Length: 194
Image 1 (cartoon, rainbow, N blue to C red):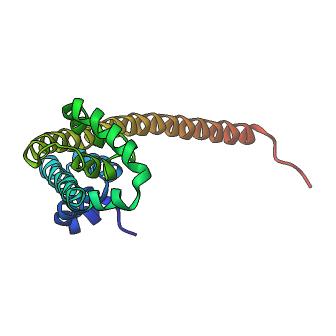
Image 2 (image 1 turned 180 degrees about the vertical axis):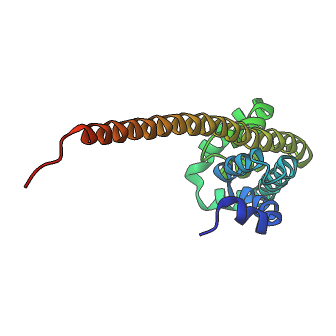
Image 3 (image 1 turned 180 degrees about the horizontal axis):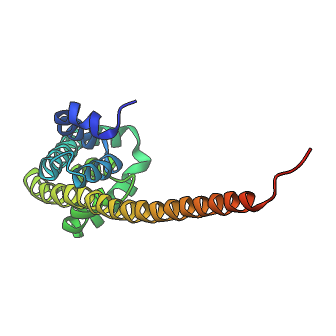
């Protein structure tokens, strides 16, 4: 079985398009792991951030377009949801900037938030600008977290390896001294007669 380093060195260029597609669908965990790979020097952190940024941005733009095109028809089919949606969109319009900049950080909300925003009176241009900023912050945050976590794990692993190495050296020395003492002790005993 190949190590992660071998796999990334062989297929590393695919990390970026995979990141773009993965973040189009969701992707926090993938971006964190890829950030850790970047901290090990296996992939480029800036290309990772750019790929995650583009994928996340495009996903929400597509969801917004779907919401604009199909959202009103969905409300016609489910009229009992209309009062709730109207209440939510009224709150959204009062707090649109904050909501658009933060919804992708709330697990499970990202997939539907852009559709909900599309049902409000927020313009495509305003959403696109705020979404672009938010996607960049999101991509940088999660890739950066993975990068910092990767560095921390590397330091911990180095320290642990040194400590394990010292313990192994101590155990080896203790066994060696024990064998020497045993051999010395056995050498002092008179031979057994039959």
